[in-house]
Length: 470
Ligand code: AMP
Ligand code: ZN
Image (cartoon, rainbow, N blue to C red):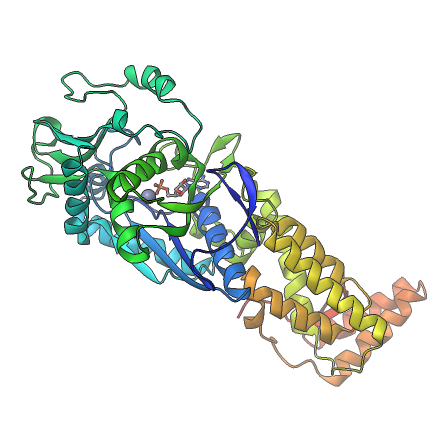
């Protein structure tokens, strides 16, 4: 399997640290608002990665955090506390708010057929792990205590910025404008590991005791502390949105490697955004749709998943209702095919067996090549439209759907089609083939009079009382 590694900026052969096993960590949501379909794109791709690895025989341990503690509006140490702002808006406590949106997040992910992580870890439930890590950094001289916060000393970590390719000197210039007056940072790029309850945080609701006084952890430290707790000090894959490269993941690497003296992560994977009108879909821009908005308009959540599959994860994908309509229609065709195919296996010629093997190989080659799902879908369609028997098509499709996750195995037959209707459908098809469209249409009306519809699809006519997934 090949994966693009942000750290080396190259597509590399994936070689796990331990044979047959993969440790994978995903930065999860900050739970102060509803998840939108931009999040959906990101987490569906993590799911696809996990499914490809599992299909290839790896035992994957997938860990995902939930940021349920004070994380500021900007990735740097600026702005308001998102969770407190969200709670004020909801008229609930920060704890209730977090609880409500965690539940909502996983319900949304379930709708998109995203398999649940093996470990979901909340920042608020791992404070000792975080203070322990901060302590190691302070003891080793990588962090310093000030009246307002404990900061990571970026100057002590010469490889800072390697992930984004930004030089520290350039970052210093960029950061200077953002520095708040009164900051005790030695260096504008230094970031907070532990915030104290002074100044704007005097009344911070979530707070814990620590060797540096009461306060709460900075955002970045939670991911280092929890990933290492569940996956070890060095692990295989860390994923996130591309916005995490310059600050969050750069800081994670610095604090983890400074503390352990070991490489933190072997492969860093970042996905591009779901866009609307040329802008990132986001809570703060107010241009977001939720999965519920999509289903209210009559779309299947799996159509959204199909839409995500049509673009490579490192390319931005523009969301439009017409592209979702096209995705729904493609998905419907796959569902119809699945529903309609009930043929018995016939013995295959050598040539057809070879063709099946080639399809298998090409599909797997695509998805194993840095998750090239657009190419994988092209193979799906070529296979469905090919001349191999329908039974074998269905078998391939259901096998591949363990990776695609479109839920095709759960597509139910929505009613037994009586022999009479099937016979009429055969007659109609013969008339259509003979160019007798008026007569064919009359037969169609007879079929409809019996309570069935007939739809001409890419794979031929299908009789059904169609209603998407069961
Ligand atoms: P947040 O809850 O905003 O911290 O985001 C959680 C994850 O979702 C991060 O990895 C973001 O990069 C990702 N994300 C947020 N908005 C989008 C979007 N429009 N498209 C793709 N990924 C997104
Ligand atoms: Zn993270």
